[in-house]
Image 1 (cartoon, each protein chain N blue to C red):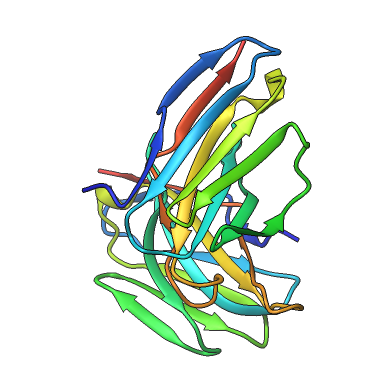
Image 2: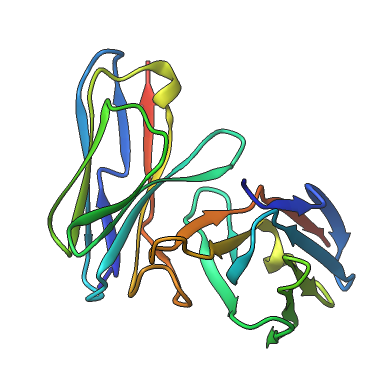
Length: 113
Length: 114
């Protein structure tokens, strides 16, 4: 039931681009993206609420394909500070009025100088 | 001021002991959560409370018991600790029943059972 992220890990050089995918087997209400540095709590990056919605945050953007139950995170011109583990968080459509919020499997990203 | 605070940050204890982790949020949120992050970094939801009412209880051993005295606090009590309970436990909160709002995490509590 946990959304699957791909790739599991990626290593980049500074300035390179990366795409992280999040795929769910269940219908999604919303998708959140978080980044977690080693030894720290996950930090919110952005939320996507509507199917097809794309959002941007500096050089990090994301898209949400509600029909395919997928979301992608795009990192362009990566910086050293982008290193960390990225999680998608998904709110599954409620069956009884309450949402269930679960996180994807995680993608470890390392940016090298 | 820390938005979501949890204590203790580090806890080392022996198998069989009982321990508690406390969590408080000053954001005025009405929903609070406990997540467990294992050594493989998977983040798994354990419990969710909305206005002191339990709304999600994942398949968690009944040795784990959440307690919410008010909507700003959600504590986690663990009985008869086992080696497999070693993990990082994150408390979190949001402003509604997990619709479109952001989840704010506490700094985490590193639990090591020896």
